[in-house]
Length: 99
Image (cartoon, rainbow, N blue to C red):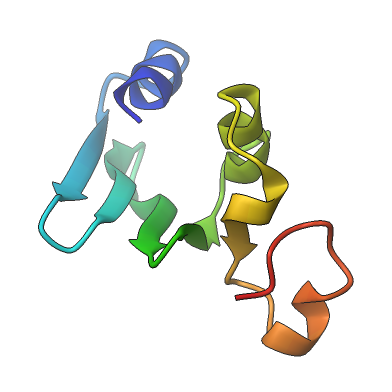
């Protein structure tokens, strides 16, 4: 997560701060962007993921490449990833875990 935050920070305005939030007790992980760009306030969840049971549940994903793709590059199986931002009836049409 920090690696991706550093990547984003390297290509953006210095007034945007990328923060990695980790709740190790509840297995929740989030990357936020916050700051100002000209006169516009920026506050965005880049991604939010949780470990629930045996799966990584991606609750929000606003990355360019897709958090699931980044995880698979780190040898995480598609069957270990749930695309929770899709409703359950839609997930069965993906190659990822349903629940």
